Amino acid sequence: MSRDIRLRVATLDDAQAWGAMRRELWPDEDAVDTLESLREALQRGGGAVAFLAEDDSGAPIGFAEATIRRDYVNGTDTSPVGFLEGWYVVPALRGRGVGRALIAAVEDWTRAEGCTELASDALIENADSHQAHARCGFEETERVVCFRKVLTT
Image (cartoon, rainbow, N blue to C red):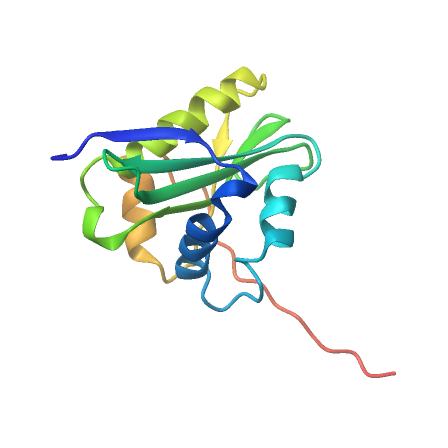
């Protein structure tokens, strides 16, 4: 990567930049960029963290959010498990090590929380995310199609 990157734990002071990147990652979700949703991301029960990647000028270029999940997590053998809730790198800098650096920070945090596994998921049609996960050492464990039926009263 041509630029130096710095990683640090995100705070609510990062709301504008972090929220904008969350909106890019989850464009169909309501209010992912509000202070309330960012506060929730940092306060999820049982442990949560958000890392922010910045270039050498201090500009935000990516983030990763992770939690500790104590319920069953598909494809894992242990509990609790670290879970990568969200992972984003600005498109112009993808493939240059920013994502890997963010995953490494999440891995270190997950180990420090006493976990031996880190899990994640991606939409079934998101092949770019599948490839990025594989490049960072994740292995695909299963595919799931979810269903629902609206019940009338």
